Structures are given as C-alpha cells and as structure tokens.
Amino acid sequence: MLFDALATRLSAEYDLFLYALSGRYQQMRAPGVAVTPRAVSDLNQSSQGLVHTFYQIATTEIDNYLRPMRSEASGDVADSLTVRKKLVLSHIRAMLIENAQQVVKATRTGVASAGDLLQGKTGAIGLLLQRQAGKIQFKTADTSGRKWDAEKLFKVVVRDFAYQAWLDFEADRYAQAGQDLMQTPKGRIFSLLEATGYDSFEAVRPEVFHINSNEIMVPYVPS
Image (cartoon, rainbow, N blue to C red):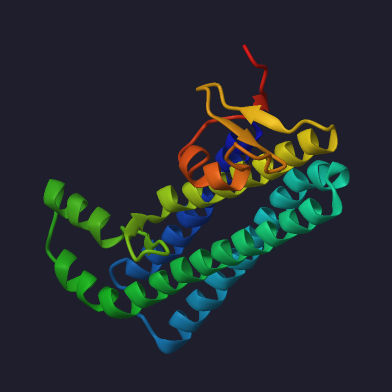
C-alpha cells in the first residue's frame, strides 16, 4: 500500500541519518582524540547539518505523497491533510534534534573514559571494547513517555501519518461520489455521512483504523 511504501522509504533514509550521526560519534570516541570545546562545537554544527538535510528529505517525500490527494480532496479534507503534514514534520524534527543532541551529550560525557577503557586492550577483547566505545543506542520517547528504539518509533510515526492521511482521502473520495455506507473486509459497517442507526467513520476509527491496522474501506453492499 502507498502508506507502507512511504514509511519504508523514509525509514531507510532515517537509518542513513542515524548511521551518519554514529560515524561522527565514533570519530570523537577514537583513542587519542581530544574532546575540546571546539571539537564539540564542530560536532554539534555538523550534526545540525545532518538534521537539516534529512528534514528537507522528509518534507519533500511527504509533500510528494500528499500532493495527488490534496489535488482531488474537498477543501476541508485538503486542509486537514496540511494539518497532518505539519504535525508529523514537527514530530520528525523533534526526533532529529533529540538524536543530534544525544550524540553531542554522549561525546561530552563518555569520550574521556573511552581511552582509559581501551588502553592496553588487544585481541578479541580490545576489538569488542572498541566497538562498544563507538556504539550509541538511539532511544526516544513517544507521547505517553514510553521509550522506543528510535528507528522503530520513526517508522511507526511516519506509517501512521501516511495511513491516516490515506484514510481521510479515501473517505472523502467516496463521500464526494455519493457513497455513504462503508464496510471493512472484516465486515464492520459505518457511515461516512453519519446516517442514523450506524456508527460514524470517526467513531469506529480508533478501534478499526488504529496505528497498527491494515484495514481498508469499501462500499457496503447489503446481502
């Protein structure tokens, strides 16, 4: 589906972003590297450059995803898609900034002991310690405060944005065509126009079209 494709593409780009951040971190954690205020400042600047570059990529991908929907959607739905775009980009920017700050913080607090940790260590143990010294685990919290691996949360955030935007568009497309009663492949029936006796689309949305759902909507045909 379109929403999964967008999440996959942007998640791959995000993995590259984290890889680039990790590379800068590893350079600072190398034995013998002096962590001076100037070096930390340069790291912060280069990390912010990565944030800016990825943010532009995300903006372009999301614009390209929404463009055909907004061109066909009614005014209110086109506006709601723009609001969804602003919210997801705000979330993405916050994650990127947090990732960059994590690298700078880890460099400031951890690099001084890395040399001591590695000093005199050779062979398999030395290689293992070198890998650990250059490794950073990117973690971030969702809106409930639950901690996630950043890569997993990013894909969930983008995929849910893309899915909900697609649902908005689909519901609007059917409503514009005069279709009211809809159903899911699992048989849940609802009304796009809030017909009496049926649940509305928004009423069933949290239960049926939730963050991990793959449900679609099709016109209801009475048996």
